[in-house]
Image (cartoon, rainbow, N blue to C red; front, side, top):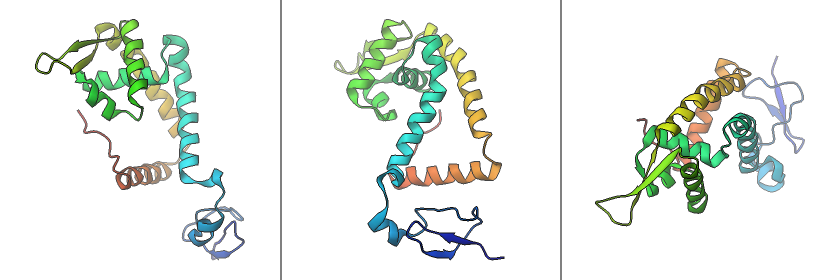
Length: 183
């Protein structure tokens, strides 16, 4: 039995892969999408909403239990993996702007989870590092954050997870946003 795909424009065409009967895939017909795609179906709109929703769900725990904002948690995680690191490099690892990273570092310093020093080899460069207390908090949060990631991803089949990972990696590559090297 040949499966068909109905686009929002009403066109019916053979589906390349199995889809649920009557399922509408707004990106299937790019000619239609070029003129009619609603804002809520834009890739950027959906990715932003998904990222915000996933982050809110996963960060609720460390926000409540450790009094960390999302930018503070991400900065702490970057420091745990890459620190000590200069502020410019920390900024490059982030998706945030300079002022938000600066506030996150200040918040972490106020909580004694991070420290900063002036680079002796470059008088204006600031080196940021995680403290022992920061590493202890990170060590408590990371297993819980991983467990929440696994719980969310477990709702997908192994094949769906692989396809999602490949699609996201391809988007990152197309946008020149390959993740930083592993350390």
